[in-house]
Image (cartoon, rainbow, N blue to C red; front, side, top):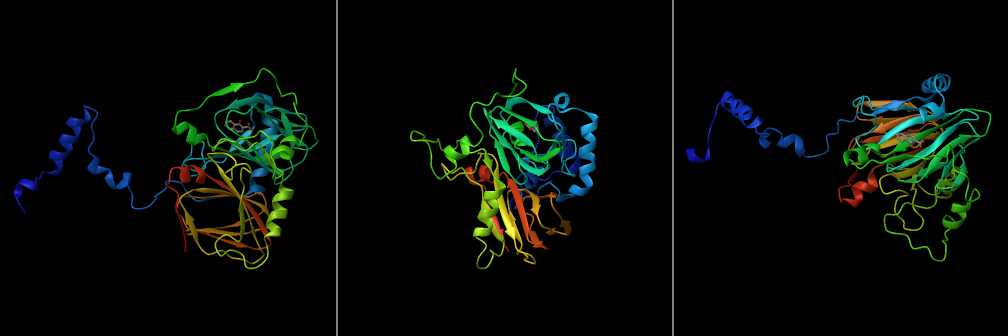
Amino acid sequence: MDAAVRPSSTLSERSAFYERIGAHGLTPLWEVLGALVPPQPRSPVQAAHWRYSALREHVMESGRLITAEEAERRVLILENPALRGQSCITQSLYAGLQLIMPGEVAPAHRHTQSALRLVLDGEGAYTAVDGERTTMRRGDFIITPAWTWHDHGNLGNEPVVWLDGLDIPIVRFLDAGFAEKSPEQYQQPLRPEGDALARYGANMAPMDYQPRTWEPTRVFVYPFERTKQALLGISHGAPNAHEGFKLRYLNPATGASPMPTIGAYAQRLPAGFETRPYQSTDGTVYVCLEGSGEAAVGEQTWRFEENDVFVVPSWQPLRLRAGTDAVLFSFSDRPVQQALGLWREARL
Ligand code: 1HN
């Protein structure tokens, strides 16, 4: 080859050059190209598992340390071990365990971040979303879409704990975060409990309702009783090799995910059933709602039990095995990736 198309330089000439151009805010692409555009996802996220039986006492201790009012939200964040200090469980998602003690109120506010709750422990709490309350029962999946007013209260006599999932890192990435505190501690109910579910969640809708494509669902609670009934209702024949019996939560008016940034799923794995390895580009947070089993991600294997949380990074093959009949809830950024044409899966 012609020497003219094969310029050569010593390492020290190159680094002197990098230093000179650095002063002008420049850096060479060729030193970082492979990392910028990897042949397949290489997530910094680490697969990890949180055992609820080990966390519970710490969550309860936070209830003796600070009030819900003082904290605004009394939450212990589940931080990915590889992303400590960043308040996230994956690159795009936040997760935490929130505690509300009897008689407490977590004051009304709203923000551009979207949130989901999965009720884990205790009875008697409610969440109010834009003027309607819903009683929080174990396994219920409740959403507070972007910019909806929400507050929580505990009218019962035991501590209540739920998992919060938010799109905080997505909104942070886009520098699009706004928040507002309500002058009212809690919202006065504008409608009786059950109104939204009756109006939008009975395979029917108000006569004049025309949802916009990416509008979050007006159904803001998906009672576990219904989810469980649906999972049992499809539990005939052979379970899907990679999923068991799995359904996605949806906005009944559009068929899209309940909220534009977070997808949520529920699956049933019959006792002894083991899934084939499955990988997808949406790093996913799993919560065991019923039963027990094992999850294997790469070299790591955990035994999971009720209320345990585990996270599977993008493109890492996951295998699940149910010990006893298991029900798993999960959530991810899949709708975002799908809207952008990025989402991929592989069934191994
Ligand atoms: C939030 O509003 C809640 O409403 C929970 O319960 C956790 C974490 C960061 C920002 C807002 C809630 C949150 C949050």
